[in-house]
Image 1 (cartoon, rainbow, N blue to C red):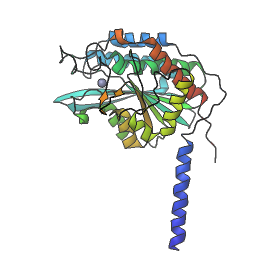
Image 2: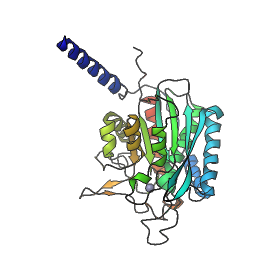
Image 3: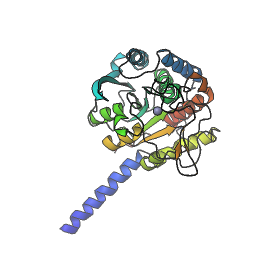
Image 4: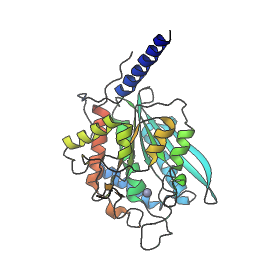
Length: 326
Ligand SMILES: [Zn+2]
């Protein structure tokens, strides 16, 4: 009796393994892939910067939420956009936070999630001057959001083969250096308070600092652990498109970011495409403008935005097999 029981347990375990791995298998589908327009993306970064630093509790922050809501209502439809609002006390201030959610292909049960953080840092820790002033965050915040905004345009123009949810997380970059408990505020809240209970997309992709000059995306370490097949597929797409100098076929560092929080609390395998470098001493380095006032429109490179957008579209429209209905 005991043996029979353990065999059943083993069989169930094997079944659930193969079922979840199947959700992270990829094949070319022979589908047409729409064009990505980095000009739009660049404009969306400029428009975000025009509000000023998008720091929780400021007018720029409130204005930016309305701007995102309008864009996603125009692309996904007004009933497919949800602003998840909450307050949290941080460093003695009670601050409002807003996660912006938009669903495309809402009838499809089979889904993936794309995310970026939209807030910008309230201080310039790495600058030599005005360290207590908020930064514009053109790349750190602005770029990932802008790519998702252009993807939203495309999703509204071209039928999707899979449901796609876009989430803009608030409060990613609020923490003081080293104080990880006060980073990732929006993703932590969303993960612990899911608007749709039981939500289980196949996978997630986080875009963070995806538009800067000299960008390099090695395969981020946690991403390799969470979803190796997805990482390999994305990097293979990039290589095939000639972007191997951007999407480096090498292991990067383990970067603390929203994807870890999401994976930890929800089990959704989320990967991170992020500009960083692992130096010869095994230390993670970010670009020279990172967390300084130089993270402004001058360091944005349209070609980097274009490459990231094209890789995302190829994956979403042409590499995800239909789920077997068994
Ligand atoms: Zn940052």
